[in-house]
Image (tube, rainbow, N blue to C red; front, side, top):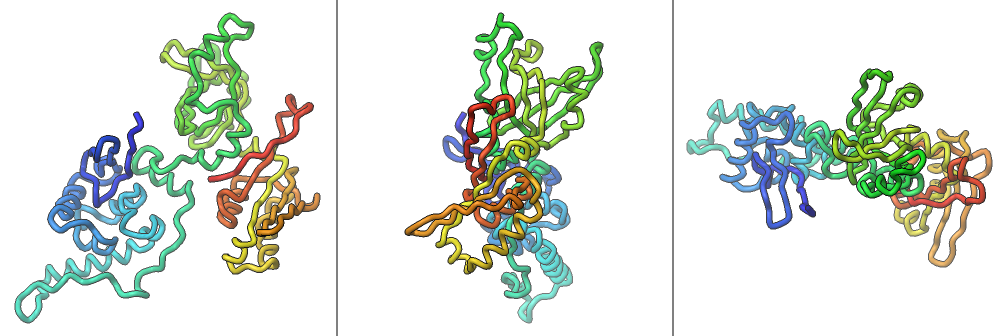
Length: 387
């Protein structure tokens, strides 16, 4: 429907979902798990009477902490509802204990009737002095941030775990889920074997294992951000791959696209299941890191510093079949350095995440080998890696 869904925001959201303009829906605070209606009513009432909240410390001073306790505030942070009150969610979570302590102290002073000499209420304290508040820290990794959204909202709102695997998807699968069509099934009806062979990938969001007259089976619901589809595993296929199936794992599924008459949609009769990371480990031919002289200078690093960082990055994953290259660019020239045979690696998820943190999400390219059955006469192709 091309509608934009804005994350929950204590300075903008109501209890229910609301509409902002013709094409924007603002997430309701009432949809956040662990946040009660009483706490939300107090937040909205304070915002209506006194204006938007400026930061986490003011927010804690203005709300009723009996209705919105620490657990409630942690849920608000993980859901993204306090994003505009601090640098990032990781920092907000670290600063929360101090903000609560200061708010509780102020509440106790009010309850004790500590007024000034003229009987007037003491003025609202300003933000805590510099040096008292914990320093800002780096934001959580995407997987931790998104896990918090899934826990509190029931879905991934500001991203999807499969975003990390975009380079793998471009090189390894035949279609995104949303692009699968009933026409693909119709075109293959009557052919020997029936159905269209497809290779898709998705994160496991639900697993239904059961016993039938034909033996054990599993129905796996996969989500690749573009859509969802059921993949069914029967008999020997299920027994062979049952240990691969786990909630929140990203899988590559090869099988036959069929029309599910019971549900009235599409499903996949599965032939093979693999963890997407495992497929990368088996088929990655080369990882190339691209660095610019301007970036190196901006980081205040020397070439010796760079070598030290590369060694720390690569050494833990040495022992694989994937070649490592470094493409170094200056304004007037560039060079490609090929690491020796002893520095071939296993390009794990952890290695790629660390490399992206060091050099940037767009600094990596992965070249893949085709499957063994398709490798004759084909050269590996590069795919851009980015989270």
